[in-house]
Length: 486
Image (cartoon, rainbow, N blue to C red; front, top):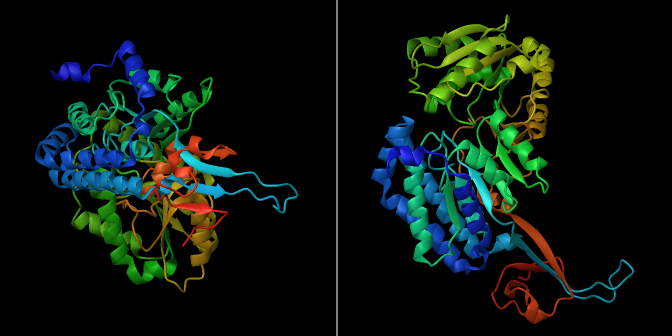
């Protein structure tokens, strides 16, 4: 297939056909063991074609082969993690309340049996900066398939050839176990994505990208005749708060860490720190400026021209503020360090608390603890908030409380880049970080986005789903009368 065909937008008729096939696919009825086999099969195929896929991704995104190899490893790992979650069956969250004629509320309790069921077809808008982990076979696809939902991926225009090839590998894994036709579909083009989002058969959507693009799609999802859940990861400046004690004790260490995370992947990470609050009387700013002058960390190229243009516009918006100055960097292939005061940020947060998606960050110097805490309490919704401090700091507890109110992940003496795929991970936060702060797009809990609970009341045992039947013939983990049997 030629590049021009692959990059062409999917036609309206084809979009409708893909969505209709997804709506008709009884993927949820497939045995859970086969569902897990598909997820492992996709992972095996990604690993088996590693060299080919990494080379294609590098050609389309300008990301390094080392970075892409690590990302592909993460992607196959999370597919296998969701296969394990499927087989564990805890995600079904089965709860049994047997009949109780003496239930204390004053009326007999009926037989109630609750289980999570899939929402239905999920539309995933793939991201540009993670061509594997947040793309065709990434975490959104893995968690939706694990939940029992057919998946339609709207490919990112930044890596269409890679998207097509990964889509072929996903389809092959599905075919190996005889999965229903329509379980997975791939579409191309902005108009195709919008048309699919508005299709009445689509039950939920995911998105990772810009605030403007994500908010526009979220609004469309909410204005549908039947609104659907839209799990959008939008913008985040991921502020870092450095206490006076930490700045005096560990200035060089903190400076080196910040320079590295701002430069990594050319700053094109949703968890890159974009605001660093430091005491005005510490040497941290000097350490940073000196480090970036002496040995500037190379940033590498931007993903594409659109992202480069957006980054340049965001930097200009912040740098043009009269109380912002350039402290270091900003040359070709180097990170940019801007500086201002906490007072200026508090006075005009809309102008200065602005995401610069690329290799740049803003230092904000605070005069005292009161100003530091005021800044921490004014930052809005974030994916992450990092605190560099000492356990004996008087401000530590107050900063932790402010961070908890603002972010989905709170870090202590650690940097937020590198989001581990685990059972306990939370990658989300209050708006504008995401459109659904109670959910995560990374980690085991991501599966819950695509499930809804159904309770069966007084339904005869032989008509119940097998997971709910008396005697628990499938040995599904479940609670009975509020307790899990030992």
